[in-house]
Image (tube, rainbow, N blue to C red):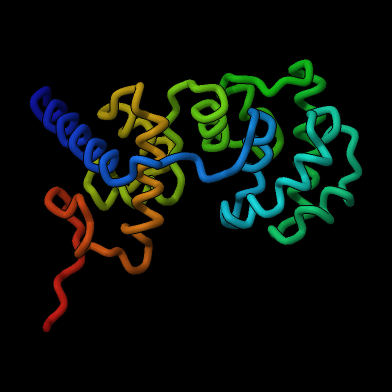
Length: 218
């Protein structure tokens, strides 16, 4: 078993190195300047794209720069701003609730612990990890659909829940690399290892991937 773990760690190290070389500019693709903005943007990104969120958040952030502003906001006013993202009523309700929770329980500041972050309305474990890793600089390996798909195809994890996938990856990826590894895998999942038509022919990890699509007949 020990040898197997070492082999898996070496393979994960190789995959991370290749992705780092391939995507040197990998980063969180949601625009933000502080923890509150990232929390809001990540909450809004459910069932839509980062690009669309980034089109809406400048106006939202300008109108509601603090947790107190969200806590006191009229949900209808927020809805008007975020309507292009879909699910506006529920997202607006969560943003107001999030502001009230931050003000009431955390003195107006976004908390740093996973437990406290996850207690905010609309914030699950993935969002908490995104905020920890990117706003606070605390190593965090957030597992979204891209991370789950790509690492499964690469044979790094079993087909399991996001939490189990996170634990499997954290066991083989160095802690200091958790946040960036997540970004690199997401970049790869969006630009090469897509859900429906993965570009296996130009994948930099083709040599270690057990998934590659069969070659087409010429």
